[in-house]
Length: 245
Image (cartoon, rainbow, N blue to C red; front, side, top):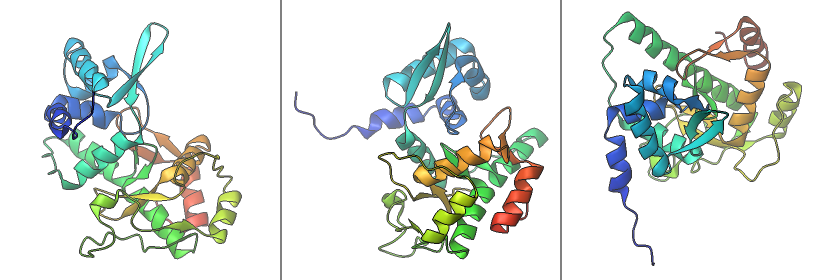
C-alpha cells in the first residue's frame, strides 16, 4: 500500500484528553514508570490508566519495558519529548489552586528535566554560562522569535548553529563529563517554555545531566520532573560556572 499524507488528527485526538497529557508529561523526564504511578499522576483509576497507556503505546508515543511481572512505560523517543516541549511553549498555564500545586510549579520552573537533559532556570543558566565563558559558540542563548531566518520554532533546536569549542572540551574533561560516541547531534537546544530562553539538549545535554546525576550534584524528586540541586552541586555550579543557587 502506498502511504499518503500524514494524519495529524490522530495524534491530536490522543492529546485532546487531559489525563493522557498528564501521563506524557510525567514521563517527560526520560524515566520509565509503572502504570500505578502514572495513574496517580493522571488522577485516574488504574483501569482507566491502562486504557490510556494502551492507546498511547499503539500510537507509537510510548513504549513498554517488561520487568518481571511489571510493565514500565517511557516515551518512545526524543522526538516525543520535543513535541511536548513545543506544545508547552504555546499552551496556556494551568491555574494553581493549592499550596501544593504552587510548590510543584515553582520547583518545575527552578530546575527540571526535559526528556534527557536539564531545563528550567537551571538549564538556561548552565547554557548561558557556557556561552559567556566561551565553551559554546554560535548563539547568545536567547530566544529571538522576531528574526525571520533564525530561532524559529520550526527549527526544532537546530537553526541556531551552536558548537562546542576547544575550551568547552577542556571544561568537559575537567568536569569528568563523558560524551559517548553515538550517531546523534552533539549540540542542540530547546526553547525553554518557562524561561523563554535556550537550554542545552542533544547528546551534550544528556551527557551533562548524566554526570550531574551520577555525581549527586542534582537529584530527582520522588514525584514529577523537577530536580533539586544538592549542596555539593551548588558548590560545583558556583565554582565551575559562576551560578549561584
